[in-house]
Length: 325
Image (cartoon, rainbow, N blue to C red; front, side):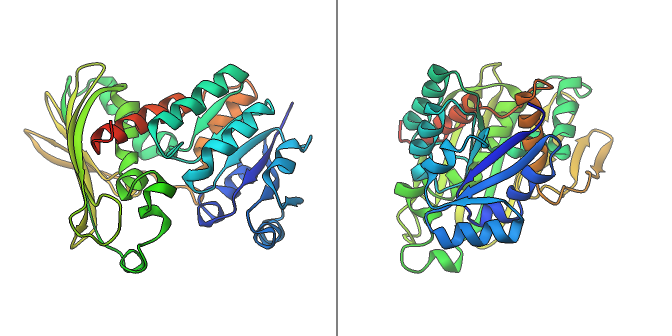
């Protein structure tokens, strides 16, 4: 097999620029079929993006002999069903995050893929972006000594679309698995898992302070990695402005970076002062570098850093920090 032929379930906004075109532009990869709950939407997406086939149901796409692997880009409440359908067919699964709407559901997805002997990848694409590779390299090199602790801070204002009618799907736990914490806060925790190893202890609480929607709008907690790195986090989605910063405290420095702004420079503070480090221009299709690692692994040329296993670990920590477990 010289090229991975992808099928895509779901044609929502996440696929328009962030991920969809990446399957066509990655080396050794092509997107050959799409499907959506709306046949018209699937047809329109296929025509606009030059994709040869579209289907009005997922099973037909999965059964297509010209589809080698499947990307699941639907809302989280259907990830579980589609992942099991794809795995049952014996084809590799690439799933948006969170994997399931609960950590137990995510674990079942991982276990079933293992039983079926199919590769399972999760869409935490920051693991393959240059900015975060730079940060991980700084830590791994130990140029600033051992890691002492990490702190995550994120705040956002309540968006207009979430003030009306109970808000968008992202703040409906039965659809998204949680609130904005599960949607965007998860990226910070996944990066910690990748940089410092699995988080094995976590405790926290999710609160609904604004009552603008049903999901939690503030989460706080603490955690510790397998290697003993302690961390704290505060995620506020009910304040007056949007900002985020993660601080990594080391023996000889403090590394600070934005999780959500992938183009924002990194800052390193030492006893000599503060250094601002520019990062490479992000790719147009931000998921493409991770997609490339998946394709490379499927073709036997590399290893993808974002797996179903790592995604399920992050989902477990999310549930622990909101007090669900």
